[in-house]
Length: 264
Image 1 (spheres, rainbow, N blue to C red):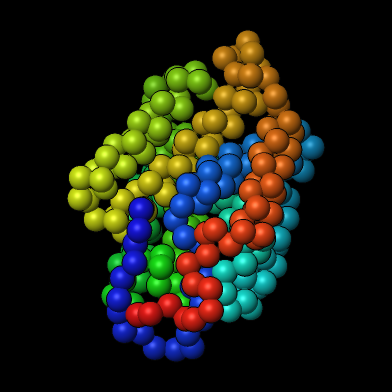
Image 2: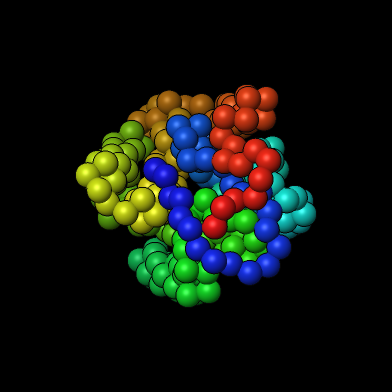
């Protein structure tokens, strides 16, 4: 879903800091969302780190990844996707802390993150006059972008969990709803819906899709899953992410700008 736009901006220009939206983008994004669910559960529950310690550890790792990302002046696949993996885990843990540690109902978390996302989008657009990910060429825009990504992961987690709570669906059946909604967004985009809106709707919906895929793979066969466990699922998906990122690093297939700053 192309989201290119032309606007005026202020500040130091960099090469575009995010990848081209190709099939590789969506593959890795879904893989990252699955890891966000399964790896957080493995560290928190299986290894017994506890929700607080797991949140602190991954938040610290995310801060390091963000420092590396912001120091770059162009898109680097390894750093960018490391940040996405970590932000997917932290976004999941934000919702888990509200639900499990604070007892906040999922419908309230969903509402709160929806409002927060709308506020972030509103401030971002009011300042920059664009929400296009093909215009992430200044530090303020990159800050808005990563804040939006974090909120979408938290919102996707809350919305997905709330849906499962309401429906009581099995892990396998639960995959079909977000998958169907993503297909509907794709069809709407092909029929002329705005590319920026379509992109962000699909981006949000990949979070519950990836989480539900993770639950399906990790859940015992007796519960309708494949029984891989959280560790097996995490290793499988992290290995696949690594392979795709290495491929993109070598081929540059998802780089939007090669030698010049983005034209605004």
